[in-house]
Image 1 (cartoon, rainbow, N blue to C red):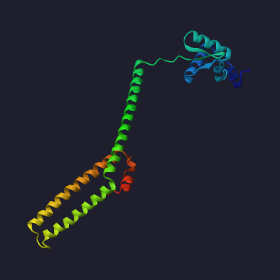
Image 2 (image 1 turned 180 degrees about the vertical axis):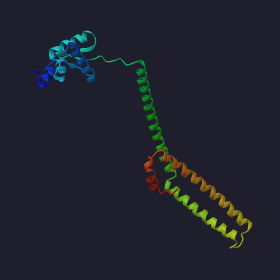
Image 3 (image 1 turned 90 degrees about the vertical axis):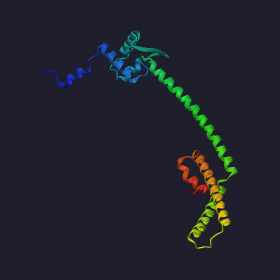
Length: 216
């Protein structure tokens, strides 16, 4: 009677591996896992495709041929694939990265120190001319300039009595004086605000302007 399909599968399943096939399976397993294993672990993890005794002998032979590395771990020996030495270019790249990391760390420390100094300078500047006071002075100057502009428009329209030369000279002098003062105050406000912008996060710009009462 011809062998059945079941008998054929059973015979195929029970076919023994040659030592070369077993060694190839073990080497493939060690390469994929890339970690140390004992003969017992390898046999167990391979579902006993390679017996413990066969694995122990094959691993010893492979170690003696320098195909794999082996070292004692307690009462047993564990084996792993030979790790490749890094090439010179990789070592140089790692050294360059370490140097760059060190440089960036030093730069960070320097920037933190500069930030601390800027904060102290800003605090001292605020103590000399508080921002609320500066804002009030600028507002006053703008109101005065607006009033003078209205008076000038009335004069130009001829709706009031003409002024004497002395009065015109006085008004012109006052106008120039307050215009320069207003420009100087605006410049100070701008410089202080630029320093503040360098010390706060972009997301807090609007909130800081509102807290300080700034409207520009």
